[in-house]
Length: 242
View 1 (cartoon, rainbow, N blue to C red):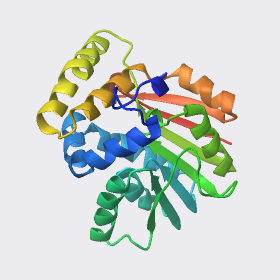
View 2: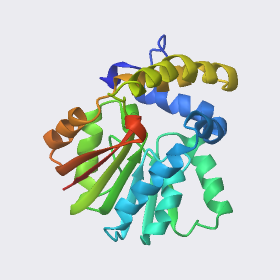
View 3: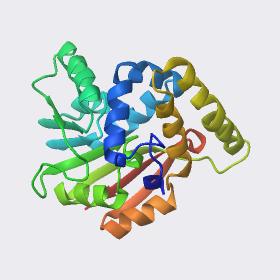
């Protein structure tokens, strides 16, 4: 499982500490490079997440591993009164806060530094919780998911957007070539942290997806678990409830 893969192979730090350091380092370049790496398709995926959440008419929404706040900003369209973006990286949050201020959304979105595996919120607090490209960075996946279940209201919706691996030819072969060869190369050329994009590629390739992740969610206690592959299976949207 991805918990065995860390950003920095020769570091004695925990995965949580390494992930925080990695995202602090690449925070300034993350948005631009991410658009290049995903060919901009991630924008479309996030819109689908927002619609799924918006259909439930939530009042309180939490975006875990919010990064630079792209999804949190889009979640304003749901009409929620309270939107909180939580991330472990101060660097990523600072970029997000600047974007939120520029868009005049300070009153609607609060950015909080915190650990996804020890959420600083009371039980049954949020109507909807989202995670976009973040759960594979959890140090202990099950603990992070259990925390999300704890703070989600009964009947609330949980939506995950995460990378996955295509299962059909030729998309599977194309994905493997891109993720193992091209993505790390882009990282080496354009990023000041070469290890970061090698890690993002490697962790994506081994992270449980589809029915494997569905079963983990059910084991934690989520109900109505479904997965919806996107763009030939290179990403998947998961929905669950409590």
